[in-house]
Length: 287
Ligand SMILES: C[S@@+](CC[C@H](N)C(=O)[O-])C[C@H]1O[C@@H](n2cnc3c(N)ncnc32)[C@H](O)[C@@H]1O
Image 1 (cartoon, helix red, strand yellow):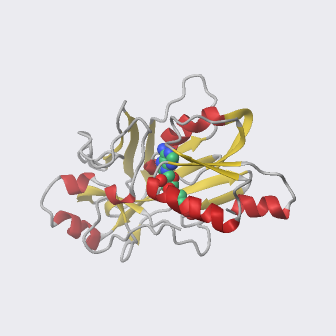
Image 2: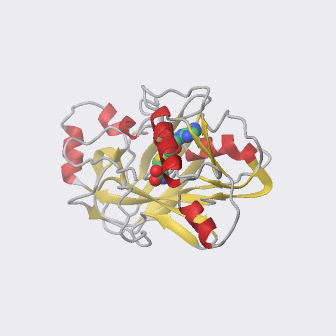
């Protein structure tokens, strides 16, 4: 919609293909196009972007597939599948996104998770409005994904080792920042967060047991973004000052919900796949 307004304002001729795989959204899109009188400009393609046919190649691929941790709603996998629609010198908006992590003490959240008395709740990341947390260190960048991806052997697998100097830790708060185009960015990383934007809450990666870090020592944590043929999932562990178990190593929680499979149309996530912490988690509001 913003692109269409910008085209009018700058007197540019625009042709838009709107690719949408959720049939309910497609109905809304058709109404919107009719309401706004965009029939000559916008063609709606009711399909997953990974396997639909493009009538022509595009100059710009615009998407909004970002999760609170940037890549956690499978934007990389979706956009890799859609890249074939893009001209050789075409651009993607966003052009890149980076996740950020920060150790936090979140007693209430930790106890809510613990009250379930099972492992699976400790192996889950929660999209949650963080109340009553102590942020123990500045954020550090974790994974960066860039589009379009022109490397010979593209892979969305990532690994990052982070070291923080802090006191006690019960988990990690995750954020993202996206470069839309050149110096235009959008994100929720606290030091650079886009003002007045409420579309994303942070994500919380719990630890099975709090880790006590003595003054003068540091906390070392490892994050993996793992990609299988039908699954994408995160694993995380602390190795210093004491070793935690490797969380989610048996892929109990992957980035696809049980109800939304990796279909021929490619990965498609619904927000509801995220487990919600009993009292604090709040739904991401879709615009
Ligand atoms: C976060 S929403 C975008 C919301 C939009 N920014 C707005 O303001 O209305 C992402 C949209 O992408 C669609 N989507 C997700 N995966 C897709 C795929 N593989 N192919 C096509 N559409 C997909 C979802 O159905 C959803 O409508």
